[in-house]
Amino acid sequence: MEKLLLLGDEAFAQGALDAGLSGAFGYPGTPSTEIIEHIQKSDLAKERHIHCEWSANEKTSMEEGLGMSYAGKRTIVTMKHVGLNVAADPYMNSALTGANGGIIVAVGDDPSMHSSQNEQDSRFYAKFAMLPAMEPSDQQEAYDIPKYAFKLSEKYKLPVLFRIPTRLCHSRSGVTRTEVLPENELSLPKDPNQFMLLPAIARKRYQHLLEIQKDLEKESEESPFNKYIDGKNKSLGIISCGISYNYLMENYQESKCEYPILKISQYPIPRKLIEKMADECDEILVLEEGMPIVEEMLKGYLGRGLVVKGRLDGTLPRAGELNANLVAKALQLTFKDGKNIPEIVAPRPPALCVGCPHRDTYLAINEVLKPFGQGHVFGDIGCYTLGFQPPFNSINTCIDMGASITLAVGAATAGLFPAFGVIGDSTFGHSGMTGLADAVDKKSNVVIFILDNSTTAMTGMQDNVLLGKLEQVCMGIGVEKEHIRVITPLKNKHDENVKIIEEEMNYNGVSVIIPRRECIHLFAKKKAMKK
Image (cartoon, rainbow, N blue to C red; front, side, top):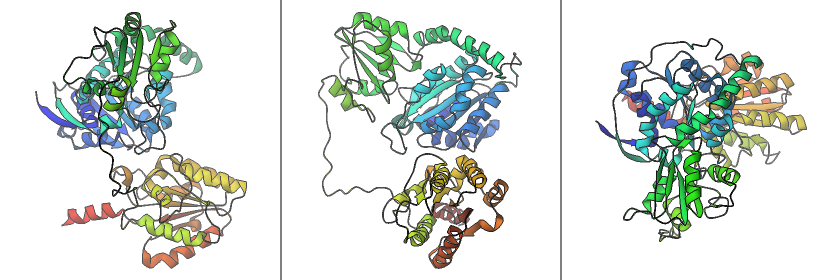
């Protein structure tokens, strides 16, 4: 079969395509973005007319994916780990509605917070919802899992979580393709009440979910992605989850590990295999990328005074990514720390691009706020968050998607004046509209800047759902037409922009200012295409 060099994201995407995918729904977020992008570029996807467009946010993408599953088709839903928080409502309830066509929820986790505002482990969501989960140890497994997971999803009529961390998402390896399966035919659920969660039905669905947990555990115990590798030295047993198995094997390239190893890539955790290790070994070391979910579970249910080592007892760091050296330290093996970075190398934090329209917006905001000092501008998630950095130092908060508007509303309600919210056009479509509705309803004294650069720049120039519609949406929400002002963030418009911001700041109510100029990279890309 054909062999390809693929990122982990791309391997999963190709695996889903070859497994009979009919639709992919998602919202861009590092490190998961390349899954959708790979499908959008795929000849097979174009030939089969597979749906693959970005959704307004992760909640809508999860619901759209469930709708396609309802119709009997195989679908994937993609997001980063904090996106699963946004999709949590439909995700948790999908454990009760179940699935019809196979559905995989692919989540890119970001340990060490390379491009995220927190570090969380999506396996907790699968455990919370009592849904099966998979995490590959390498790119080949990322490719192979979709075929298996779709079958598992359709066998038990449940969504399957696919969890992949940054290091695996964005590293490449050779992947061997297998046969390409046809798409499912359109078919509605056999039970017409399956997706109707009225309490009387939901109670029965929940009881069913509880009853099949033993079957899901049995599937994990017999899974081709979980394996028990025996070892002569029983003083220690090693449980390695997902990519941590790779880190372990890097330390045994020229020799065989002397300890028994349990590789886990499918959940719920395979209890019988763990009990086998507990019976044979004096201690257990748990290697898992992310949070100590398996380690905590072992401490809870083994109940035999067995020593369990890992992130909780300090054998491994509590935060951040694992790597081969950290695993070597935990096993008291020889490891290489690498070379220290020379003092001449200065850190270069990310900065707004030269020519970025947000630069001129922040300069105008800073001038208006000079008499008031710091602490009046609430920021959001996007490349414009870099307005926090010098030389601008313009924004004071960054919490979650859409929070700029609602924080400004809360602060204004407390008496803070002026209260500005800064949000991007894509983020406004994702989570800002409801906050603006609150502001209008409460008649909040706020100025909201919707930075319109015509793209979702931070994650790779994806389209957004409100492109060309911002003014109409704001008016529809209830912002008065005369207080929706469009400005052009350019040096030669600076004085005019400052004047407009001052006027809206002094209006006692909700104002929306839309600084509109294309992202400099989008502009350059279009210019190159014209040539």
